[in-house]
Length: 185
Figure (tube, rainbow, N blue to C red):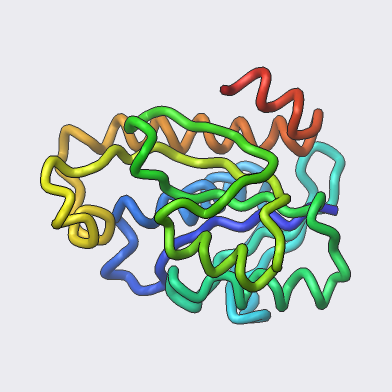
């Protein structure tokens, strides 16, 4: 079984922001595999189903980004999952829009949601799919960049990244993180 988590912020105001790329991938997987993600459990929205003959739990934490780890830890504890069964999907300012990077371990970088995940799970060893959102020219405006509106010309590039991240997540489930990394990195 895999727990597939997309990081984002729960309120409608944040739905079309760069910080919600993880939620967007969960939405795509939900649609493609007909898995409703609407049960309120573990401080998140949860859906169970099958992807590529593998049982999965899709999770969208509803704690706001900076506390995402609480929801993930609760879900992992409840289902008695191991770190090898976790895939976390999130936005990354250090990757160009439209690009993705897969890793099977590593630090959280400057991403507050990932800082929460690493702190709550007490490990850096779990699969992650990072979706490029680029960074603003003015680094002092980073918060507004990730939670603010997206310029029209950026939307197709960000959607391309979400599509790639969706395919990469499916590949991790089918073939494992190492093969997926070789294919998508």
